[in-house]
Amino acid sequence: MKAQHSKMRSLKKEASKCKKCNVTLCNGRCEINNDIPSFNKAVSKNEWLRAYKILSQTNNFPEFTGRICPAPCEISCVLNLTKGAVPISDIEKDIIENAFNNNWVRIKEPKQRIKKNIAIIGSGPAGLSAAEQLNLMGYSVTVYEKDDRLGGLLRYGIPDFKLEKWVIDRRIDLMKAAGIVFKENAEIGLNIPPKQLETEYDATLLCCGALTHKNLDISKNKLKGIHFAMDYLKDHNKKISGLKQNLDISAKGKKLIVIGSGDTAEDCIEMAYREGATSIVQIGYKKESIKKNRDKYSLEYYKSDTFSKIWCCLSKEFIGDGEGKIIGVKTSKLEWLNRFKYDEIENSESVIECDMVIIAIGFLTTNMKEVLRKLYIDFNEHGKPTTNNYQTTNKNFFCAGDMNIGSSLVIHAISEGRAAARAIDQKLKYIIP
Image 1 (cartoon, one colour):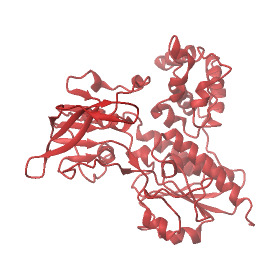
Image 2 (cartoon, helix red, strand yellow; image 1 turned 135 degrees about the vertical axis):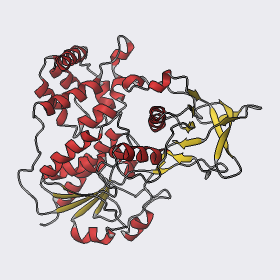
Image 3 (cartoon, helix red, strand yellow; image 1 turned 90 degrees about the vertical axis):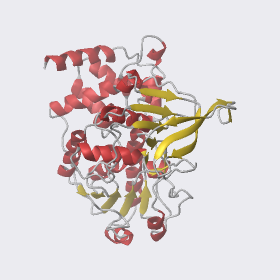
Image 4 (cartoon, helix red, strand yellow; image 1 turned 60 degrees about the vertical axis):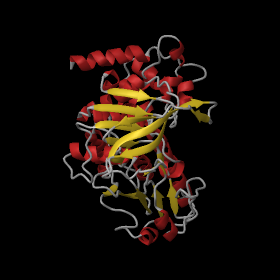
């Protein structure tokens, strides 16, 4: 308890650093427009309940964003120019945890029910935020999840050291108590006929994520020991939750190469380090970007002799052992001429030895082309539905989150879900009951 009070005093002091600028750059970088100066002011005055009320007006799940958002608001804080930014995400996390501890977080039930049913496909951050908003408006909401546990990307795409799964369960339990229905192991096009959604629901919101991996178009990319990032993350999350794994991927005792430089690549590296990989090499073809919030997580591997990183490095070929197993990656060094163009440096080729590779170079949209065709929803070559204010070309279907905008941050998905809920409400309000 003393430690908790000490931490709250520390955050109160940090919040008091906020200058409440005339031009609030922090707010400008917040996708859901959190009123950051106002909740900072409340915390600085030890008004934690008021801070919670301010924060919960714009953010459905501050317990998620406070833990995993890379905090562009902090990067934009003007105090970065002098004595260091206000730790906005830490303050956000403690506001919501203090609210839970004091039983301020209540079940959000609607004042009255509207006799309209809405289906939401996907229980990731976009689907969950839309479900909570629509339920508050009075609609009857059913959320379908294809996996065996709820949470989507939050559950299986983010490691426990960043987001513990009890945090997800705590919030979903409140949503269930508020009247939202959740159905697991329910996949549209597999055991949920697409046409069933049209007949049973007044509107359907597709929040199926963007989990189709970008692949490296180089030779031998099917060798044993090469894995996509999300397969590795999902498998490991299932393992630590005591669930049956699909692929049983492990980096323990392996010489690992991770290709990619984003947050997903870093998650894979730290997970492999914690598993006990004997060596980890990170390859990125761009120049290294300086992440000002890198110390938000432990990133212990950065201090380890087992880890090294190579930037401006092009992966050219996977090397096999003749029996279909990966033993190395042929690379070359790059010289960037401008933001978009590079040249390979002559005579810079080398082979990095390994016995496992994780490809973490990003994601395309969800591969649901057949389902979209059956629903007469137009889509582009990647499978991204055509939308106008979240509405697809089938007027009863809407789309939000990564499926709509491409792979992005959790806070963007929450924003998408909230905006799509408003679009659905706007449409249904003008339909005769």
